[in-house]
Amino acid sequence: MKKIKVTKNGPYFVSGEVPLYLKQIVEENGVNVLKTVKKFDTPKEGYALCRCGKSNNPPFCDATHQSVDFDGTEVSGHGKYADRAEVYRGEGMELLDDGRCAFARFCHKHLGDVWTLTENSDNPEAKKQAVEAASQCPTGRLTAVLNQKLFEPELEDSISIVEDTPKKVSAGVFVTGNIIIEDADGKTYEARNRQALCRCGHSGLKPFCDARHVSARYNDGIKRKSGKNIAK
Image (cartoon, rainbow, N blue to C red; front, top):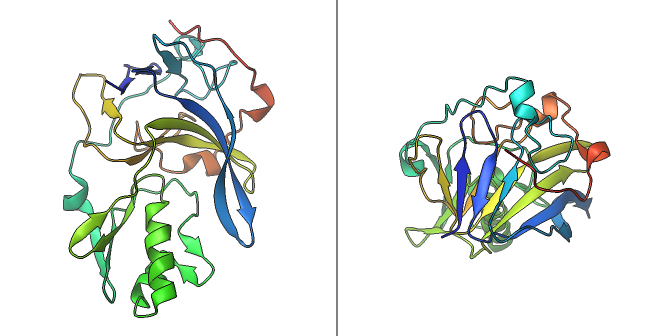
């Protein structure tokens, strides 16, 4: 079973042989895309990812959270996506939006942002771009509804450590596929195939990312090493 365990005031412990990638947000032809840089070597027994933002061995935990008195209290709650999402209606589609933003900016396409594209979805190309934009949202904030069913792309079970090249900051932990996220008390969050976890330590929606890495100017890139998993 592939699982991410949020430990109390400590790291994310990943089990179930989940592949770990380093990816970058880059701009191509006027829009942001996600590019794979490398795949990390990780032990089969699992690995621990830093979530305090202070590790000297990013993205892995090196137990620095213990010396900096990291407060990793989870505050996001366990509510259902469908209950909190607002509905935007277009022609032949709807858009669900629960407001959880990691500021990846994949929701902006050549013909406009996803909300404008949904409004103009009587245009086939606008509709196509709206569905694409919604499906690329890493937090799962945006979901297209087609034929009264949520349209969810098929994604690899994986975890990606993301660098935001245009903003020159280190972004969140993007989680895709059928990976269980369990809180520090053993309760699982709602299963989603796209979620983003905080790794800068500043989020007000822990354990999930709320884009505060941007305002905090969080950047671990100059410290990144090939690294060992030495968390305690």
